[in-house]
Image 1 (cartoon, helix red, strand yellow):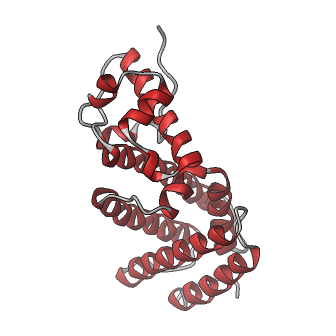
Image 2 (cartoon, helix red, strand yellow):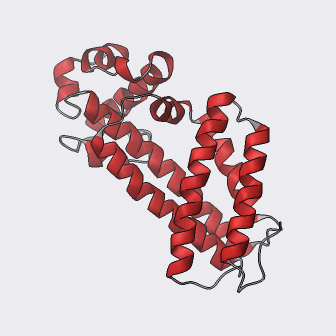
Length: 221
């Protein structure tokens, strides 16, 4: 049997597992389980993520599922790890692109890129807009936002818009926190993202980051 398809998050779900599958068959089964969990999350919500429901959806035994994901919290943590990994991979791509290209409006590039992800990642939206986040997932989200802030800083440095110091790091973290809150509200209002609110987010963040980067060439207003 060949290698299974990459699981949600490119394999990073293993950080939330009771044990890590070693054989190709076990990895494929777990991938199927997480794909089933995402379908249930999107269609029925966080509260439906029970081991019994997920096992039935994935057509595996509850005992087989329990080896890796013993309860709803573990399922939520594993799904969240996958979503974080996809968002961070997209940020890594943007940092590389910023180093090779010249963007007239980096704030718009970043917000548009992440709005596009929000439109397609229905599971991420269902998880974040629900009420079933675990303490482990909340802690992982705080670490994730700091990694995203590092990416924003990398973009600004690659474009020559700022000098690297603690002020820049702190400002990028604040910008990510603000952008995340605005994006969530935009997508609560409209499944495609409320364009007026996303436009306001761009306006706000351009002004804020331009002030932070005042020692450099600056950002468009």
